[in-house]
Image (cartoon, rainbow over all chains, first blue to last red; front, side, top):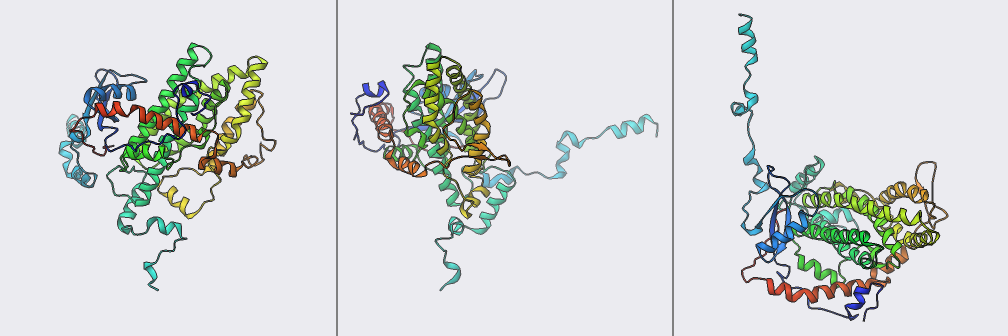
Length: 121
Length: 328
């Protein structure tokens, strides 16, 4: 038996050579992506993952892992395999061109016209 | 001789990028140089992936194993408040392991594989946790000074290049600030207390000083190997730089309490660098390779926990479960 300074370890009566079978795939379950809301009115933010056997357990682990400190009012979980994503390799789909100023607030400059008009030019 | 097909096995820098697509490698390095982060599904050199998995996984294991020497004192911490605080700290450490394992998983190593490598002794963890916490004061010194060392390392690495690791470290560093305050408070309480309390904390400091000096690892000469890891922002500071930073921040705080650091050569020289007696690196090697006072116990306890919890995990598993590498 392991003789330890830790009374809990002694109580557990652990053999010194306690070789075990390696963990099999999925022993730690699949993963859920966790979304956390700090306060009402905020967006839910993706904060990380938990391993869980089902959604209820994922919520419990998510609360423990990401809602243990600071502000929290709500958590969502969703199975990693149910999330669809774009590829970083395709990031160019988000690129834009300067000609598209017409859809930006900065693309409209009226003060010059107003000032000219006021001066009666 | 077929000149350029041959890579000198002694040329570590060339070995690290051997066989990589030069254009992709250049784009990858340019991205890091611009201060952008690398995300899980980006192209990355094999060696970058390998080094990060090794580093993040070891960091995760250190959190799990580090909870054991501190956990020793949960039931006997003096007073209800300290029991609660220590429980909260130990829970944080285990939570940190979860965050770190998740970051390593995004690089393609499953959590089961990491746990298997820990419990068979294939993966390493921080050497300091192979020493026992003999008294309550040892737990206080660990919470203050080992956590202080860890924070220096983690703050540096949080500025690294791999997105998921940086995000995990940011979260971890926030919680570590409580650990540091808690540890400092405990050490100050003992050091400003009765002669018996001072004696306890001095003995613990004397015991823990060598492992603390070992904490950042042996002196690393700037090799080609380190240079590439630093260019890739896998390694953010040399072991010696981190040790200097630690000494600079904490030696004055220890001396403030009138405690004696067991190294007569420890002093700050005229150039502002700390001089110290070189720690015993043979002892470090011996302990990291399994010869420390607690190596066997730590792994036996870990295996015991995995084995006795196995039926619960199996009972909860469902037939349609399917593992997908986490997204971020």
